[in-house]
Image (cartoon, rainbow, N blue to C red; front, top):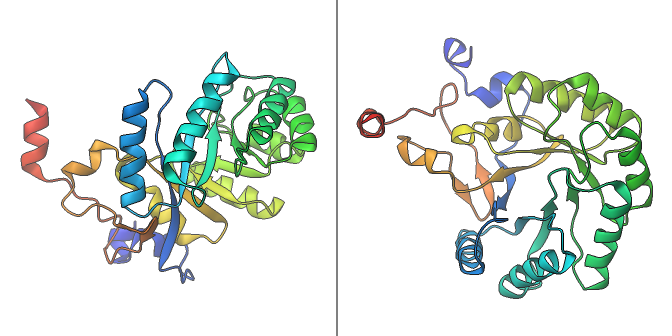
Length: 249
């Protein structure tokens, strides 16, 4: 549709947008990685100017999570902002205890993402009411009405979305009505950058050095941790044909 109208996708989504750049955060996807691999990725994010890093948590042993958080924080320095994703692993009591333990050990996470099961509406409401940091979700909800239940119960202080544009648009509208921010997840070829550039409701979007960008003629550009607005028609994410041929063999 954007190509037919000869406009960038972000302008089709919101003709009134004035955003020149959009905040991004570095997502290490680190849970199974070794300490060396984690620090190598952390260094890459720091070199590229990212000021926010998301860490995967949810180990059975809280000491494992603490060690990983402290490792990244000590390497990156006090200026780095840390967030976390627990991938539905806890009940609300355990999540609250973990968050408080992190704080007691000097780790002030900016927010916690997806700590409880997607259908635990009451648990989210209880956790959000008591948590000293914001609770964000939910990456595993694919139905806007299920997401609305979490929001209306007071269980979310920010919406995590971005699997496809139509669902993301509905999520952004829901977030606007509830006056809470939106946090976009990883997307193929960083196409969510257009959503981030289109709407002020979007606080930030995820970036993880996904190898899919290596096949693009002109990938989405990042500068000092911010998505740069591309001057393109449509989404502008065209693959190099010789790369497609190479990967098809």
